[in-house]
Length: 272
Length: 196
Image: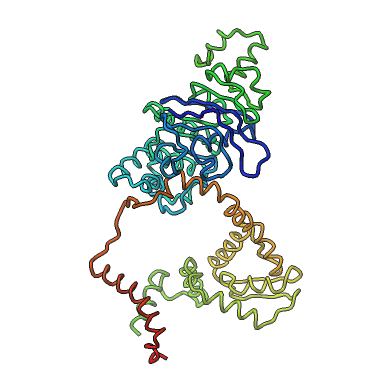
C-alpha cells in the first residue's frame, strides 16, 4: 500500500505550495486515476508519490509518504527504485541514452539494481511481451517513433517489477492502439497486486482502467470516489477536465429525450 | 595488360560487342560508380579548391561541364550568390540525379543550399537551437528518469554479456595502466632525456 499522509509540497523558490494537505491511500491491486486541469498539481503529486520530490527535484515536503507502512523519508532514491516506478509523458527524456538496443534499454533498470542475469532476461522478455514490442528488441531506441519510445519506456518500468507504479500522462504521445496496449499492460500489472497511480488527461482511459478517480484543483483534492461517480460529476468540466465519451453521450441523449436503455443497446458497454 | 584486357572483355560482353562509343563507355563506367561516387572524398576537396582558385565574383555565370554529383557546382553556387547562376552538366544521368538528391536532402533538412555563408549559417541555427536547448532544459527530467531506474545505486551492476577478455589481454591492460604513472615519474626524474 502507498500512503500519502497529509502532505504539503513546495518547489524550491516557489512562494506558494503546489500541493496542500493532500492525503491519499493507494491499495494493493488498485488503479487510481488522477485528473485535473493543467497546473492543478498532478505531476507534482506523481513526483512526491514516487519519491523524486524532494529527493531529486528539491523543494520542501511536510507530511509523510509510506510504502507498505514504512516511512520513506530516510530512504535514498536508489532504494526506492525497485519499489516505486515512474514513467513520464515525454519518451525522449526517459531513455537512458546508453543502450544500443531496445532489449538493453528495457533491461537497464534491473541491471542497475544488480538483479541476477537470468532474472534480468526473464523480466526483460516479459515486459517486451506485455507491450507486444518483441519485434523492436534489436532496434536502436533513438531511431524509434515517439509512440514506440514511450512503449519502450513503460516496458523498462515494468521490468523493474515495482509494487507501486506511478504514471504521469503515459499515453500522451500514443495513438489509440498504443493507448490500448498500455491499458492492457496496466490491467495485467494490477492483477499481480501492484498498485497504480495514473495521472491522465484522457478520461476515457481513466474510465476504462481505474476503479477510483481523484481530481485535483489548485493543489488540493476536490473530488475522490468511484471512477463512475467522479467522471460523471457535473463539476468536472468546471474543474478543467473533459468527461469521458460515455458520459458526454449520455448527456447528449438526455438532451434529445432518448432513454438510457435505448443507448445501452447501442454497444451494451456504457458505464452505469 | 591482363587486368585491362579482362576489364575490356567484360565490358564488351555486357554491352554487346565493340560498337560502344567513348561516350557510352564513360556513361556506363560512371553510372556503375554513381552509388559510391561520393565515398571518395577527394572529389569534393578538388571541387572546393578549384572554385577557390577561380575566385568567382558574386553575380558570375558559371558552366560546370562534367559536374558529377556537384563537387564544384555547389561551392560555385555559394560563391556567385543569389545574383549569379551555375549550370551543371554531366554525361551520366545517374550522377546528375544523385547531385539533385543530395541538394534535395539538404533542403529537406531545412538547410539553405544557396546564398552566402552567413545566410546558410542563419539557416542552421534554427535547426540546431532546439536540440541544444532541449539537452539543457530537459536535464531535470532525464535525471529523474535515470534515478528512478536505480542509476545512482552504488555497487556492481548486472551485465547481460561479457566481452572476451583473456589473461594476456588483462595483463596488457594492466601494463598499459601502470605505464602511464611510470612514464610520468620517469619524465619528472629526467630519465627520458634520451628521447629528445
